[in-house]
Amino acid sequence: MAHSIVWASVATVDADGKPRSRILHPIWEWDGTDLLGWVATAPTPLKRAHLAVHPDVSVSYWTTNQDTCAADCLVEWYTDDETRTAVWQKFETGPAPVGYDPAIIPQWRDGPTSAAFAVLRLTPYRLRVMPGTVLTEGRGEVLRWHA
Image (cartoon, rainbow, N blue to C red; front, side):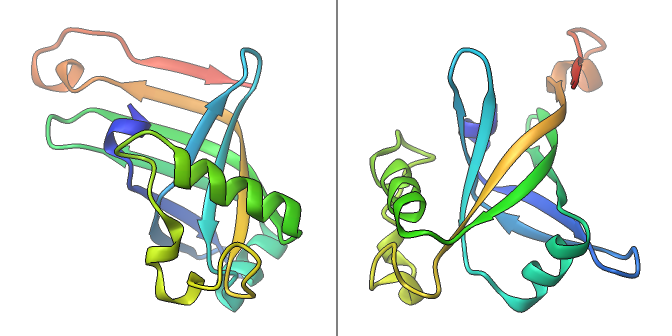
C-alpha cells in the first residue's frame, strides 16, 4: 500500500513535545524477516533538532479510496558516503511509482555525497494497515503489528 501511495505525512516531535509534519517519500524493503524504510532527505537543522531529542517518527499514508497505513518508527541518520550512495541507488533503480532519480532535486544535483543529501533509516515498531473498505463498506480487516 505504501509503495502505491508513495508520499507520506511524517511527524516528528520537538524538545517541547510539539509535533511537526512534513511530506516525505520513503522506500520500504522487506528482507523476509525485517521491514526497513529509507528516506532521502535534506539534513535540515529543524529535522536534526527534532530527531536528536525524539528519534521517532510517525509515517502515515492515505489515498482517495480511503486506504490508509501507518508506521511508527525509530529513526537513524546516515551521512556516510557508502549508505548515502546505496540509498540513492535504491531510489534511482526502484520500481515506479516509488523509484525516481534523486538528481531531479536541485540541491542534490552533485549526487549522493552532496552535503545537502542525507538518509534516514526507519525501523518500524508499530504498523497499521486499513483498507478503505473497512470505512466505506464495513468490510475488510485492519491489520496491526507491534514489536
